[in-house]
Image (cartoon, rainbow, N blue to C red; front, side, top):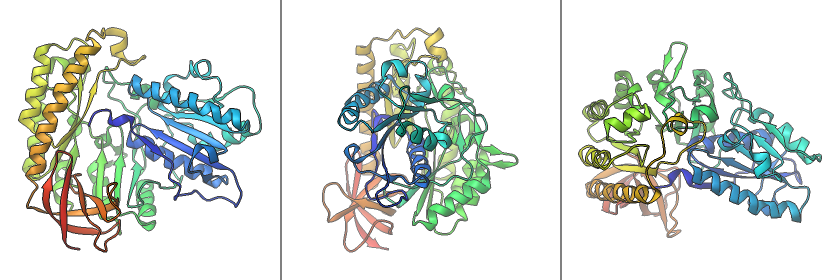
Length: 460
């Protein structure tokens, strides 16, 4: 699953924000992680209160926003290319407002007005409360871009409502913003600021709101989600509290930080039936030398011990990961250590990346990017090939089992099929057979590929 962070989420045409008839329309494209998806829903809620409906295409929109990612150079290049494409909409319809929001707006804050002078609004991750006012001002006619990239150590967007998009079955709630880990390769602390937690009452309010709107699954989000602490409330306390919300059938969270995986969190996963038996646990590298240069704060043995604790508590737990190849100074021996770790741990799936140096990080300042692009590509290919083999084996082991599956929507292959996910986050395709998205069904797994299971519904 390489380049996972570069997937684009178009604004859904069927989930319009509240607006008056004939009012202005906004179109949002989302690049990056699930936190960006959640932020897009937040922006749509804020703009909806100002009378904006959701446009299905840029050509229908009065305001076009690109909600951006800065984690890799390739992501920024794609956004800039897209912004250049959308410049044509401004030429055809001079009143159209084009904006860039999110991490890239923060990362390139001093250069964007030069790189893309046709962009009207530039807003960082802590400026969304002010977005409607900036958009209205831009629509009133301006000559210079409106820029708000201030980081705010107090901003958690407490009290604001989102307009959930997606499939309507699953929703996101951001419980923590920012990051205090400062891994040497990562730009997130510079683009999203320091860690701050959303109050438990606000988290529960948002979860109840999602449930009232028909959501059956909620994903709790944070850059280091299991580091959550608000006064005396720990992440394990929050998991148990969310499990008590009526209407929610499944709880997920991402992305946890390995060394913050405490015994109480493992116990909450094991003991709360609603908490999905799946953990996304980023390894990054199987080499202790590389982990040290990354300043990850753990060694491979520590990571393996966490995996062992999770599997002791929940024997069938699915564990997925992130693998980053080609980091500064990585040797053939380091690559071999990563491949060996992947084989020994047996991840269910992995998001895989080649290292991309990011301005402003410790690595960019102090560690030379000394691995050639060709070698990075070759090492990435080795990692992907190995993970596809491991994933295929683990998926094949599901055949013959009966799994609880939450149905999310129609299969891309056929309107007569639905796609859902197991608690272990494995995609399952089943015959529609009178069922609908949102149903929770028992499925016998009949066959598998390295990425998808196929099954038959045996009971609801």
